[in-house]
Image (tube, rainbow, N blue to C red; front, top):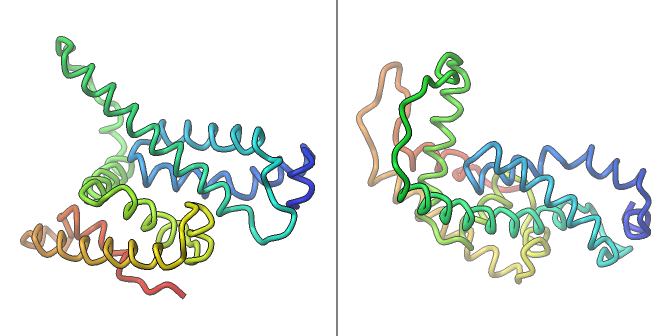
Length: 201
């Protein structure tokens, strides 16, 4: 697969997209907190992967770390762009209120609420910690693959992930709220910290 991708085999690249597009999209969503931005990150990731395919080494394992490394940079660029747009919009007159049709879909509302909660908690981490957390915990890369994706040492991955976990655990404790109906968790940091408590295998 690596050799075929490197040589520009379109069928191999289509197979690569089919296999990893969802993982790249999910990674972009976790880092940006926005569905449409995540779609842009996914598209730009595969476009960049095609343009830079000659850099792929023929020897090695899965190409997912390579793709997620590209996606991490694209998501970081998107976040900076979002901040610029938000600053611009904050200076504009407020538009009139419009009906939110998404409010009719309960499942989507719940997903959006949880995503905002997780993204708010992740926003309190340093960028480097957030990226390692997203790659190791939610995208399922091991330490070596995460190091490959980010171009850093394995030891750096371990230390950043450890700091991120400790911070999220502290945030969850600081933001602890009384249990909601039926024991639902409402703390943003607590929701974000849930998957962090799982041990990597």
